[in-house]
Image (cartoon, rainbow, N blue to C red; front, side):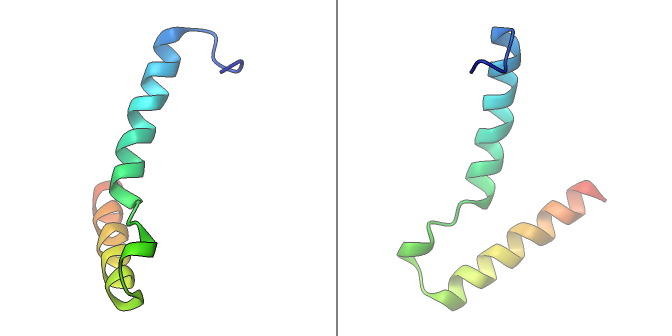
Length: 52
């Protein structure tokens, strides 16, 4: 928090971080390896389509 000088900056960072976390967090401990890998690949493919 010391690196942010304005509340607006913190809010912007938190908003972006939350959307990334929700997109990429797959809760690995709840699913088997194959399902996790499929979901992770799908998330990365979607991210690449958004960035490219």
